[in-house]
Length: 259
Ligand code: KIV
Image (cartoon, rainbow, N blue to C red):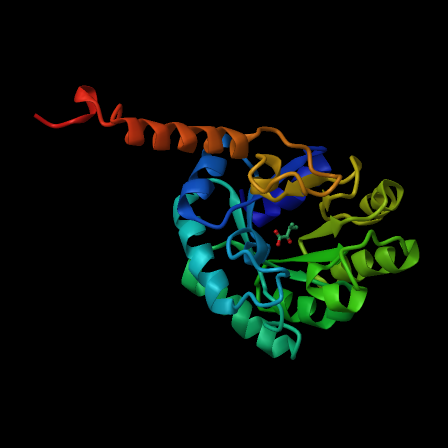
């Protein structure tokens, strides 16, 4: 998957599937399954590091994870989040940090949270030939200002954000936690693909945190997450069985021992 093909998918009416990965194992599995793009999200701060927000995630941590992911992937487009405070200071800061990510990881694109407020930065990245995806609606890096992870309902502002991102040169836009009707309106108003998360069925594609949709992050997943598997429960059962087998001496048996 290349950036031009990603954009063309919208013209062809082909819905795009995107999932997150943070390491080699999961990236290889998602790529082999045929997902269109893999996002190395700064959600790794919560999913991998167990932190309360994405704000502490650093550029070096993103590079560490993105390099493992990009090494595993042969087909999908790898998109890497620019973490908090790595692009807010100036467009130049963003170009330097995004360029460093692409150079050190082999990923194909970056994503940043913002629309109107980051138009100059999206423009600078685009002018430096760094493919950039925008992220509007609920922006997790703005959680302190927003006062929580809340559905965003200001249709006029959301549309302006999406249009500004497109005009500045973004190749796609994540729409997070917005009413489905507004997502439909935005999707019709822009030529680049919209990728929804908690934004209803009318987007050009969907993205989920892999661990959420596989049932690995517990019952507290947001309303929009459908659990396509319950791997958390299966893994728990397997570990219980392992503990019991070790304690009872049933494992290792003859079949799993060297002579
Ligand atoms: O960080 C992330 O994983 C994301 C997606 C959930 C869109 O930004």
